[in-house]
Length: 487
View 1 (cartoon, rainbow, N blue to C red):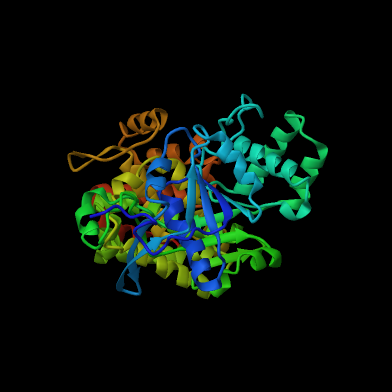
View 2 (view 1 turned 90 degrees about the vertical axis):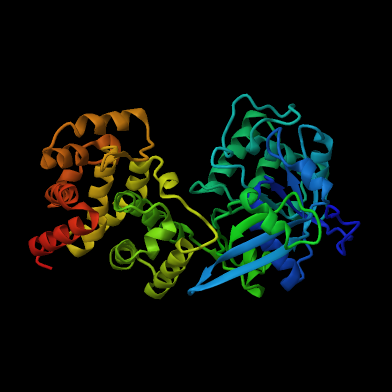
């Protein structure tokens, strides 16, 4: 078969460059390119994308060999039904390596129709490097590269206010655009760039915090023959993703006019404040993931799908989400229910094998951010402990003992945390184990023994787990804590 390119396909015409995208990896190609393709198809957006390779090694050559064309496969479950779709993505106009072709990179600043900057350079990408200078071709960091590009555009168009850009980073850090803007302004001052340029950044460009949500396994190397069999061309850039799609962008009516996603069926929310949506995702999706890992591994499951499909562990996760986590979130209940149902559908996705052992990495810090706030807020609102999340907390502590029924557990954390639990579990005193863990402020940034009844409940759960296993242990724990809390 012949490799896909524009010469041997119907997509010979290239779109005008309206978007410069920093990053050429799987996520952006399965998320941003897909979103803008929908805008092109359904809202006559007519936008082409120029992709920038943010580091000195990447996929630029492979992308250019296929003239920016590649196939996106989307698979998932929605309301119990399996979904399988594929789409040829056609909106990448060119891919540029600024380390090899710096002048081609700078030339993008002069594109008349350029309107948007999109990025996903990993969480570490939005960083300030004091060693970056405006004379470097290019500077090392993404914010410095972008500062150089913005300054070139400012100079080329003589500070024209209408040539300012809409900047939408997709890196997975909170307040991503606020952080990016702060670093750009810092470079502008340190590099002694014109005050008029700084004014242009502040007044002619707009920065928008975002939340992105889509699982993208990427190139399906283990099943590539099955994917190739569905194509009548050769494609070295196949990318696979789940069907679920959510993009929350902070913005106003001006941004809604620039990005008419309401004309598509994509779940793109342009809102004044994205923090409730971020909290929702962290507490429900990430929180359920983190909470399920220890007790589900101790139960005997290996994957997320096995966990939600199993009668006991599935009901446990369901009740933890709907009866406990959701009760702490100040959002529309119907919207929370709908999102939670979608999350469980995503967990059931038969096309993604999500191993619990891979989610177990750094479980203590994850639990602090993703699950602990649900526990403390549930106590504050309800005046009692959440039964399922409290038991999950105990299972986490038991998991860090490192062994279960004579086998090693996939504990994967920093050496100081592993050593703490190794020393702690030399004791068989469950009250001491619970107390020492809960009062460790280096884990939780607070003394959790101050939460009424939590130490006793964790100790009870630990003893029940060791004596009876997970399922019978939970039944014993539930009966005792419900009696204690007079539920």
